[in-house]
Amino acid sequence: MPIPGRAPAKIKNQVTRSVTGRPQNDLLRKLDAQDFELLSPHLQSVELAASHILHHAGDDVAAVHFPCGPTFVSFAVPVEDDREVESLLVGREGAIGIPAGREPSLAYSRIVVKVGGTLARLPLRALEQAQQRSAGLQELFARYAACQFAQLLQTAACNAAHSIEQRAAKWIIAAREHIGGDEIPLTHEQLAGMLGVSRSYASRVIQTFKARRILATRRGAILILDAAALESSACACNDTVKRHFREVLGRAASAG
Image 1 (cartoon, rainbow, N blue to C red):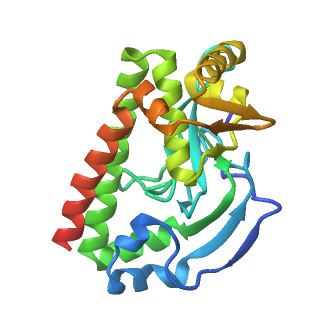
Image 2 (cartoon, helix red, strand yellow; image 1 turned 90 degrees about the vertical axis):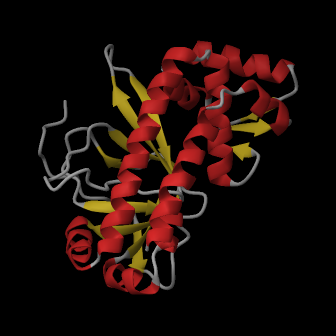
């Protein structure tokens, strides 16, 4: 059981280097030149492999991570019977570790890299200092935190209202959008975790899509054969969340 307030474990086997130019992250690319200059001296580019754990539940969050390019990270919330349910995927559109208030931040869930690659890391203290100097930074990250909360609310509603098949299609489409390709490095076990069901149940759902020639599988990956049919099988939750992000973060950009 994680110990609340403990310091996160040291990250091993990572490649860290200074950031040159703008990372491939939508939040960082929304910043004007002056605001980005406040952050850029403190940013580091980190290469992390799939399955790397950024935080366990209860860890202190001392840095913000911005997934870049196809990299994305998931939030796995523990439930009874030693199971976890994926509640959130975050890719290049966002960040992990943005504080909701002024108090020190603790991770509520296990946060793990799903598709490995580059993340830009920013010490939380550096972000706080930069926000004290820029109302634009305060506005953007406050709006992003509100969007992420709305995304969690949508996930909760989705889990209650939609079928396993609809939710499976939604998660696979979300992974496709993060990766930018039709080969998703996702196992049946990982999909089961996203859906909060057993591996055998997830496998039956995949078999249904395979029978309809929407998906195929290979070792450690799901292949999308018919993206349009997969989207027709999914609920509209992804589109609802994306529309909210565009509206809320678009206002932040215009205000800046």
